[in-house]
Image 1 (cartoon, helix red, strand yellow):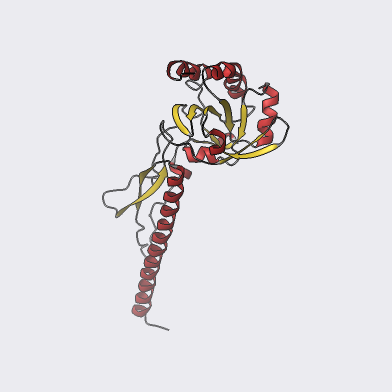
Image 2 (tube, helix red, strand yellow):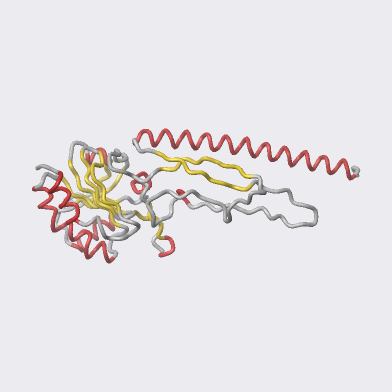
Length: 276
């Protein structure tokens, strides 16, 4: 049996090695993550912003005592579902002045703004012949002026009774004013979007796009977390005017509110700014 002092020294040495190894692994993972994020976002021409994540370094556990090191909580994407700005993930309590603190930088996708390029992602829809098609946003919107509006979910009350019907009614007028296409997108599959279109009676006026995996919502930075309501990850409500894949006008709601993204709001902007 090794003497107590020898055992204590070995244990301390092992802990030091584990901490060093953990730091090397974390540095490698963060480097790979930042590189991948930078590459993909550059291709989509979407900006990024930095948020600071403060965490308290773990304190050594005393013999016979309790380990009081606070854990960290982190929200996916670093965003609250009902607010536009990105909020940094923080520890469960503010770091105390006596603690050893470390600041880590994490690259997060910012919320889309006017002047940004529309991310090039795949969406799906059913054509007039009843065939499901998969198409990229670039293929859909290149060289066109398109009104794209998003809803939190198909068949939900506000979306079904106000948002979608409003655009169905005003789509012909928008086209007369110089809009080439009016499209609706939601984090639903193409089958649900097709059934919803028939239920509301869009009569071919609206292109019903399915963002089934929320890829577009994530790339735009407009995720809406409705997990507590049993709806999972959805999209915030918005309406935008896209001119040749560039967002020239954006009415983005707080969460699922319906105050600035109606067809009437978009028509007013088109009347004031878009020549036919």
